[in-house]
Length: 299
Image 1 (cartoon, one colour):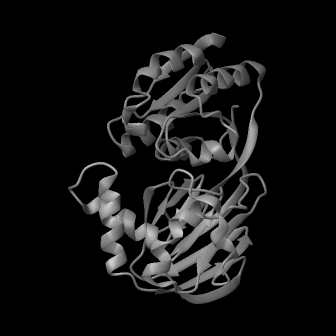
Image 2 (spheres, rainbow, N blue to C red; image 1 turned 30 degrees about the vertical axis):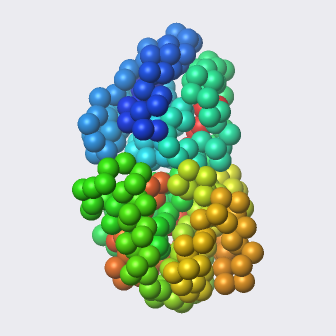
Image 3 (tube, rainbow, N blue to C red; image 1 turned 90 degrees about the horizontal axis):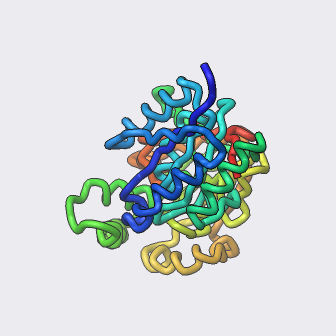
């Protein structure tokens, strides 16, 4: 089986569709090295993952995700810990993984670099996080796993039919703030047990999520470690005021905030659905393991 094609997973609605017209140019740039470019057909997340797995099974030289962190997340399920190149063309609302690993935020430049890296046989290894549920289901994520207030907001927004677009998340934030309460968590970080009440809990392979909110500003996707954050109960007003500080990562100086670093983390809590890269994983508990160099990034 020959590795003679580039598989492209493109999300036409990523970034609210603002890059939709760039796809033909991106495809042309990717194919500049002479390889065939194959656009993968998918109408939902499960189909996207299946298409990526099939492409890898058929010997793709690379899988390229054109979209945001959600598109990257879907494609990673097929390339993680596999000897296949991975490219990212940042075209989403949130491009946190791309920003963390030095992918150009200009889609055409990113496509040209992917093509050049393939021609040169060059890749850069970056860590990924592997999760395992209580039922043994394994998933990979690249940026941040939310397991507190932000996860609750995501879960509520996904259940809402209206309003459409980003306003749905604004409404979900207000509704979750109204019922905010600290929940009991148990976190095991490399075997050390931490038990605490909190509203904010997250595990990061990269510094930011949600399009630049630096929840774990010192997280490094090439250091073989995960960063873990939790905060003593903050209350509604402090949580509501947290967003501006998240943009700069200055919230970690608050004495109520704890940041740990570990290779393996287990998070336990009742009534929380974990979200990673903005995608729904499933209920806690979750085991999260850093896998060094698990993705071969073409850049």
